Every structure is written in structure tokens, then in C-alpha cells.
Image (cartoon, rainbow, N blue to C red; front, top):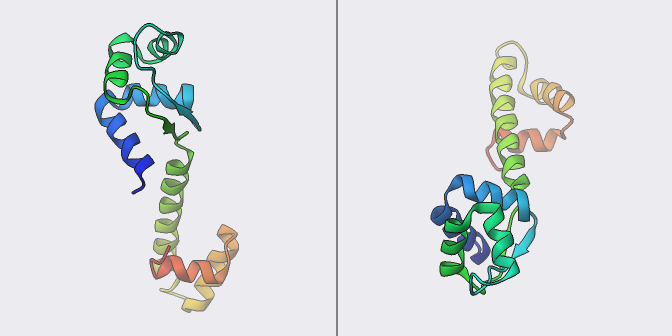
Length: 127
């Protein structure tokens, strides 16, 4: 886990999932530098996104710190890949009941548009 991941995780734990989702919608893929005080234009914008109470908590804990707010797309891609890989493994098990392993890999690579080598990696859980 990187320092950036650690700060984002702390932020998510402090403000909660709903407020963090609002931060992602407003700042996703960019950096956020919470102001040091509540008397700034930046604070007013942050408060308009997550509410004044949450914004105050953010500046209390992270005021002046540059925080990269992920857009969440990487986590979504990882989740989608994991589901796809689980399906590949299940389908491989079904296909190999009636056909050879190499034929199953060939069929799965065609179905999912992946190389044979990648299918083998998925089956060996190396991804």
C-alpha cells in the first residue's frame, strides 16, 4: 500500500463511504488540498460537496495536505477482472469434463478475447 492509498483509506474511514463517494464524484482523478481554515473559498466548495460538518473534519485532520482522490475506476476494473477470471475457472472445469484442457483453454481464449497464455495464468491464479 502506498502513502497515497493510506491517506485515502484514512480519509474514507473518517468521513464515511457516502461522503467519500461525493468526494470522488467532485474531485475524482485529481488532487484535493483541504484548506487550513473554514474562512476560504476552498472550504465553501468542499462544504458544498460533503457538508460543513464533514468538511470541518477533513480540514481538521488533513488541512494543507495534498490528497489524490482516485476516481474509483481502477477498483471497478479489478473487481470486473476478478469476476471474469472466476467465470473462466468455472467454465474451464465444465469444459474439461468432456474435452481436453488445451481445447478448453483455446475455447476460453476465443470466448473472452484473451491469449492462451493469459488463460493459463488465470487458471494457475497468477494474475
